[in-house]
Image (cartoon, rainbow, N blue to C red; front, side, top):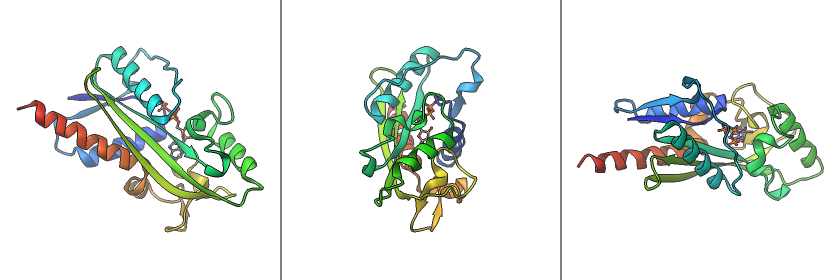
Length: 203
Ligand code: ITT
């Protein structure tokens, strides 16, 4: 079976590819990326939650490319900022904002706030048809620090500190991030559901 991983975010692509290789090493399952298609579409993320946006992306790409699709909608949630940037994480500092600009805005809003707890949320949706839709969630808890540390990862990783490792997500390897991340939790549960569905289908 071919499944399209519908994301334009190259940081996500790297992580999801590595997770899928770990989970489906011997399966007859192959993953396609958006870049393998000549025709590209824009999908408006006008949902009110990570789940709604992941569902919209998975459904629209699946309808357009006529194949099963996995979509990820994720972001950083800072309770002291009333949940910001949340579903607006990628465009916090404006449409097409760069990661550095989003981080700058985040640190500016947090400069006088002591409570630095934050978490990443990932909502993953598999859409094969209107009747075959699976949804899972993952969460990674940490703290926001005031100076960027590390060069790895993407998005808010350089300011997302893991107290138990005393490092930011941008200081640990992709492999280590993929052992603990919000994305790992969501995708492993999603892959499990897809696997079970495939097994039941073949009876
Ligand atoms: P697609 O919609 O094409 O998947 P996107 O980057 O716009 O790409 P989202 O709407 O889900 O995807 O926004 C996710 C944003 O949340 C992302 O751009 C980062 O700013 C942030 N984010 C999500 N997961 C992250 C992670 O693991 N590390 C750092 N930042 C992350």
